[in-house]
Length: 391
Image (cartoon, rainbow, N blue to C red):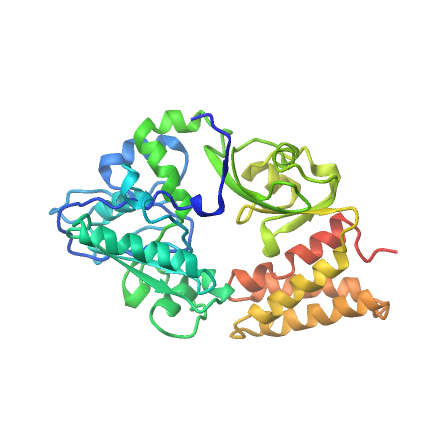
């Protein structure tokens, strides 16, 4: 289990193996949030693994199963679960013997699954559909079926309820909560959502046991984590490291240039400077440092990089990707971009930075979903940590 692996970009979802289980009477939908669903048959292995917060609920007597979920309590009737963007080679769906997807289906007594992939990834669409078709033709999905749904490319559909809207054929907009997805989710049914990486880790926990899994990483961040490294690096790609490895170790693997800044967690993440290269990549250490691991994206900016231009691009991105449903995000992302353009052009108002900070706080506090709540994170971290726009 002590491994350090460099992956190709399409290895993220090699766990999508499909094997037949007995007939199920409810739906299973794979989707876009951090959760895993397992039956009582593996609960004893998963719980000591520290991967999730465990919630147990009784399932119908027909199945005699408990449900183990990290972030959501799953009702017992007509259970659903969801998984987001996936990349997989057609042949791997038959070659992975530990099928995390169907472990989750077994736990929920499910008979139907949805895989949601954004429209920008036609190669992933073809591979996944081919794998599903092959599984059906070889009768490996008896009593269980999978349907591939293609999104329209909206970033906001990473939010769980906006994802439901998209799958149901509506415009991708977050729903008000409550009710929460565990009560009223996809097609009005209780829904649990599952992250690809979480399901992949479940395979190791089930195979080797929770104690073996907790032997990797740290006390509060067990196991491994995938990092997608790009920017000023000689070897961009997807890397798997145990929690507790440092940012410097990750960048050394990718043969990064000496960084002026590193963006952790993608556009919704935070910038750090060279002084944090020895930051341990764990949830607890990044939280203490005031940053986040986010999606695992790591972008390296060398000494020649234009950080102001990068911030303008991030602000433009959030302006474009706001669904426009709530005022704090719809207006706030526009005002943020306008303020950054004034700062970049040397035409800033006297209290521009203070106004930006107040605007960021409003978006964090009042936006309806995570897009608006994190739209200013990278900008404010660059101003605070890197002193961008500071004379």
